[in-house]
Length: 225
Image 1: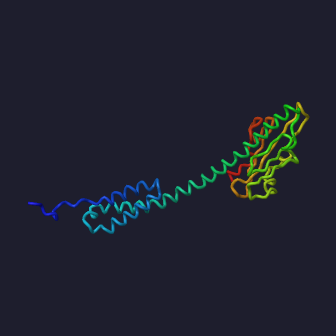
Image 2 (image 1 turned 180 degrees about the vertical axis):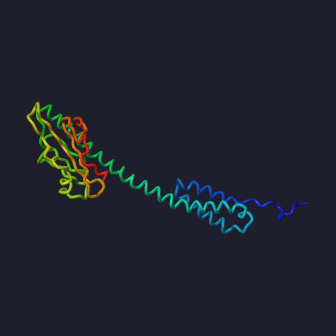
Image 3 (image 1 turned 90 degrees about the vertical axis):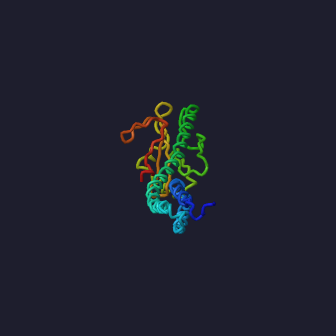
């Protein structure tokens, strides 16, 4: 005699379990969370059916995770976005440091041939890559303007700390007692502050810090403002 199918045990629905699993995974992969919420709502709509009633709690837990998810993501975004912007700004500083080192080695090569340092970028054969964010001062009258910036050149020039522009260029008697200093200035995060670096062929002491020859030094750090 065949058993009465109405007396067969009801198999709990799988949908609420899938919703919960996707809800947990959604913390790492946000698009999945939307699917989890939809599946949880469908499960609750069908909660009157025996198969779904057995796992109604799982659907409710998934929805609770949804209420937790939004503020958690907001807090993480509030922490991560400023740090990302600062990281991005610091990565832009590498343009200036790399180009100043290139200008330094160009000056050293020029000195090896001429027993003096060059006063212009053309003399030493220095040219930054295209779409540069920084202006570059090689000598008192030798300035390479920034091409990839919305900040006027006058504002970039005004960002140099007092006295730094006077140090730029070749000073002293060559070949034994001359020193050349070069600098750059740029706005890397579109705020009112300017990022400024310098490099010199001599060892310097700046604000109690010893800066070796050929090492770029940050005169004004735009990432800290």
